[in-house]
Length: 578
Image (cartoon, rainbow, N blue to C red; front, side):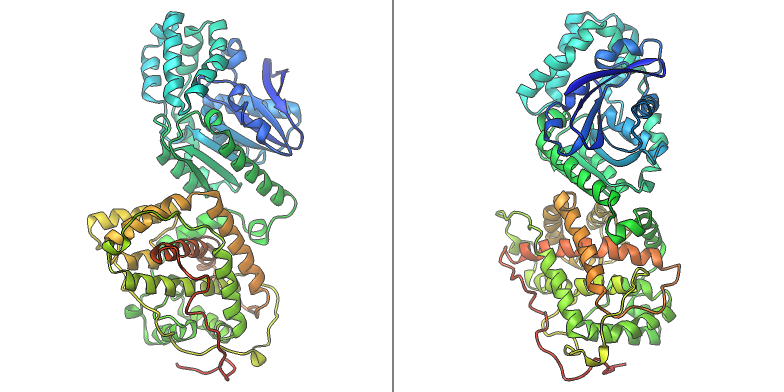
């Protein structure tokens, strides 16, 4: 990287730069400098990488004297600097304090931030850490701290924050000279005095509203910025989280490969959006996900034993047509508007009976099989509960979920094209498939304390408004569910999971284009919920159930679901059980 300086708003601002392409701005934290990113930048492809130096840090420590160098003010310095360089849009990548700077800039200047990357960053109320709070209280003592003592303090900090001892020593050699040359204790005292948790709390509620792609990489063994905050960012930003097992705080120095992989993935997504993203991303955007989550949290589910006669008859027919002995979450929510449920099902019923619909669902099932299941280990699954019902139920859910994704895509207002003449299409047999199974659901509100905590974690970790049918039913075997979730939980955060979810959403849209379009739209009260089912909840469950199926079958699950119909009936799809 080449060093640059430029006068900006009366300051000499400094940065390191390499490469050409879309701008990626790297922001360091404390006690580091732009060199924090020295192992990451060479691994970033097709990008203009700019590692900006915060005012009052690194070689710019003298620029901080007599100035506001708080995290919030650093965000404004950053924006001024980008304006001076003529950069109107960039990916912001931040570590530690730099992550706070990036968050504030993204919230206050949304047109500037094309994508957000955070790694072991401050946020919410995660900071200042105890040792920094102690320095704030002893501000006068820190200013007078002998250089030899401060040297030991810094050495200890780097050692505790790195999981690679050689990188800890290298970090000291790279970052400590800036303090040594610029007053050591006085420089550090000035930095810690400016730290105020209210800077990030002020933007925390706005993070879920950001309609930008994001990625997170987090060292799970970081004692300064704990993994729970990374998980919270992942939920609020609706972003994949790469967990670096055993990784500590200074991930850019210890784990540059993982960080570069996530950033390159983010660059690709930003590029796709700039050049014309998929229809779901281009037309809808992430605020739709937040609205759908909120609406689903408040919409009741109309359970079969609570439904009126008309809805009950529709429920029975849905089970016969979809060939499973239960009615899923999607239809239980649509039943809040019985007239719409009837209108929608009258349209869907003949489509769902066709061989073409069954084959499209099988295509989606094949796509989800591309996601690698969790690694097998020595867990004695048979000792955790009755595996027979759990396997049959998992297979049943695995069978019906792609159909539900197609249903949600057909009911979406983005549907445009007609491509199927129902009258001439072969159909599949009507009636619940032999061997499919229903397991009664456990009500989270009446579950025992331990199971309720588990349900809450499953719901919150996914970013779902409620616990899905699958997990509620497996709650009948709490120990089995606990062990299974322990395997699935880390996978929910990884980049492959998010990428496959996006592929499923896009593939279902394309497959639905070959099925008859609607000549009516969903009520406004249900549109956000439908979008959440289509873009988030159902694809998430398809991935979860695929992985659970592989685990419960001891890794020997057949690629084809055993309930897939390979036969066609003689009818045309209009037989009626109602």
